Length: 288
Ligand SMILES: Nc1ncnc2c1ncn2[C@@H]1O[C@H](COP(=O)(O)OP(=O)(O)OP(=O)(O)O)[C@@H](O)[C@H]1O
Image (cartoon, rainbow, N blue to C red; front, side, top):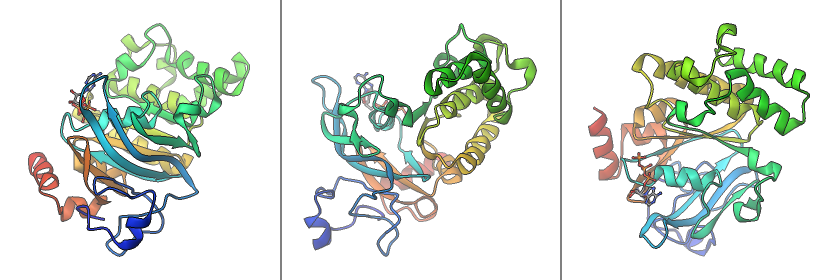
């Protein structure tokens, strides 16, 4: 869909699409204008169904969002500061539980997934600030090796071996392996954060503004790394950004959020080239 279209009778009957403020994207079967979909895929890695969230007794900051992330897909979430992107990301990774509605990972609601359940690893997050996201006491190698030991029960030696291979793949040189976050650059820390996420062998990586805290010179490197890894590993990517250009570089489809509501969704290139909603147009104008 583009700017939320009027509902067809079929959609009105759907238990999934029951509100004009809902968003459901990323499906294989799309309607003619390329976007609004009424049934979640059985192949979905992650599904948010009519999710609303409020912090404490405050107002809802995410409202009636429905979103399907198929296995291997790349979906963008864009919106200006305060539109609810990070809150939605936290709901998708299970760090927050929906006030109403559900987020299901491989068919199970987060509310039924215990803290130590291996399913928790299926959705990994890459954070905006790579320094604060890493344990300051651990070296790059230990950060990643620890995940292998914890997730796959690898021996210490085997975990270290696998961590070296993965860190090499994300561009961490041998000399940086034993360095802690304070001795690494922002770009290097983000590479370690990406490797740590991948070591858990996730189905989905949710990257929340992964380049906005980095120097312009390394932003493109990190975006290219995410792009390559996504294809190599077959992992689905949810990319959150205020910048539609960044989202269009990495994702096929995107949703646009304003004040917690999905106001437009569709192919990312369409959103960028011919935005239907005035809010999307103003987002693009602000980039230009
Ligand atoms: N821990 C919190 N407690 C109360 N309100 C919060 C909390 N975190 C965020 N909010 C509020 O929720 C709303 C959505 O915030 P959120 O961080 O999800 O938006 P965002 O689009 O990610 O913004 P940004 O791009 O600036 O990170 C905002 O009004 C914000 O003030």
